[in-house]
Amino acid sequence: MIKQDRNFDDLAHKFAASIYGTAKGEIRQTVVWQDIEQILLALGVPVGNIEQSSALSVLDAGGGLAQLSQKIAALGHNVSLCDLSSEMLALAKQDITDNQLIDNYRFIHSPVQQVAEHLSAPVDLILFHAVMEWLADPIGALATLTEQVKVGGIISVMFYNYNGLLFKNLICGNLNHIEQGMPHRKRFKLQPQQGIAPESVYQCLEQAGFEILGKTGVRTFHDYMQNHDMGDFTFEQIVAMEQKLCRQEPFLSLGRYIHVYARKKP
Ligand SMILES: C[S@@+](CC[C@H](N)C(=O)[O-])C[C@H]1O[C@@H](n2cnc3c(N)ncnc32)[C@H](O)[C@@H]1O
Image (cartoon, rainbow, N blue to C red):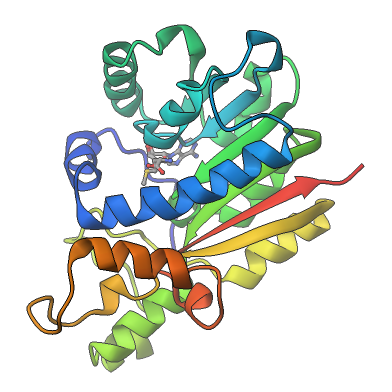
C-alpha cells in the first residue's frame, strides 16, 4: 500500500541515466510517438512545424525531464511542465534550455492534483505518463486531471500495467512474491511502486466523459525475452516487431506499460 506520492528529488539523476539511450527507452519513445502523431492529427494540427496561431496548449503532468513533450514543443506548441520534484524540474529546465525550447515552456512546481490553481484555462492536451504507479491515489489523480482538459481535447495516459508485472513475475517463477501481493521492493528504486489495473483507467476515463481513441502496449515482448543472447535478431527488428504488435491483442494487454488516449466528449 503506497502511503504518499513519490517525489523524485533523490532519484532525478538516476532516472535520467535510465531513460536516455536505453533499449527500453527507445522502444517506448518509438511506439508512443506514433500515437502522439495520431493525437496531433485528431486535434487538427499537422505533424510538423506549425504557425503560432495554431499552437496547442499542452500540460505535461508529472513530466519529469519532459523527454516527450520537448518533441511536441519542438513543433511549436506551448507546454506547461508540472512536477512535484524541484530537482527534476531543474534538470528538465537545463535540458530544455540546451535544446532552445525555453520560450515554449512554463514550469509549475506543484502536485498534479493541484495544478488547476496554476492554469488559467483547461488545455488541449494532457500528457500523464509513468506517474500513476508512483501515487497513493492514482485514479483520484487521473480523475482530477481530466477536469483540466478542454471539451474536444485529449488526455494521453501511460501507466505501469499490473498484468504485465504479473506476467513477468509468472515467467520468472516468482510465485511466492505473487502470493504476497507483489509488494514493492525498496532496493529496486526505479521500479514502480505498483502496477495499475488497466480496466480501472479505462473506466475512469469513460466515467469522466471521454471516448477512448486508442490503446497501445509499450514493450509487449522485449522485457519478457529471457536471454538476449539467444535467438536471431537485431535491435532494429525488435523495434519493428514491437511497432507491429503493440496495438493488437493479446500483445497490447501484455505491455509492461499501456498508453491509452481519449477525447473529452461535448
Ligand atoms: C517516472 S517519472 C515520469 C516522468 C515523465 N512523465 C516520463 O514519462 O518520463 C515520475 C514523475 O512523477 C513525479 N511525481 C510524483 N508524484 C507527483 C505528483 N503528485 N504530482 C506531480 N508530479 C509527481 C516525480 O517527481 C517524477 O518526476
